Image (cartoon, rainbow, N blue to C red):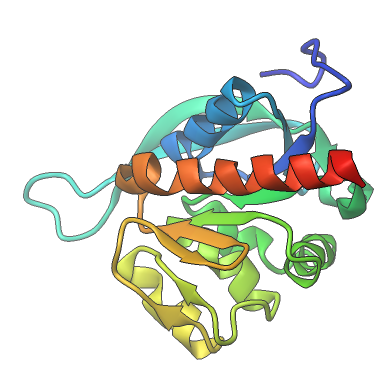
Length: 200
């Protein structure tokens, strides 16, 4: 998954937000589903470099999440170099990364654009911490991992404990176990947005 991988220049581009300790399944499932649906996934992060993803799971006998290394992923662009107007939608991946990258002023700028423009947005697990910090979740219903319920509610969002929550342009799930439920509806929103864009 290198920035040098050949990609179609005609396919609508969709952002995937990552950082070090981004959850592997949270990131790769939408990445490949976007490709299958004819979109071009573009990975963005604090810097344009290689990032270490992780695996997150509550293992038997544990009451908290255990973490170990997953695959690596190359960021195509740094947040500072992204013009959000050029992209059809955005995906906020989970893992520990959102807790650290949410304060990036360029990521806040990017996030606010997609909510203001009502473009298709998806979030899973800890990904909610980014739109919550950016002031985009007030009055919005979202699913997230229960440990992030406070982050959502303190920012004015409404926690819903379901595998797929759709609130207008915003689609969310709780953890990677929900990907089969909420990623499909998000891609359908992207397809509708792409069709509308081609007609205009």
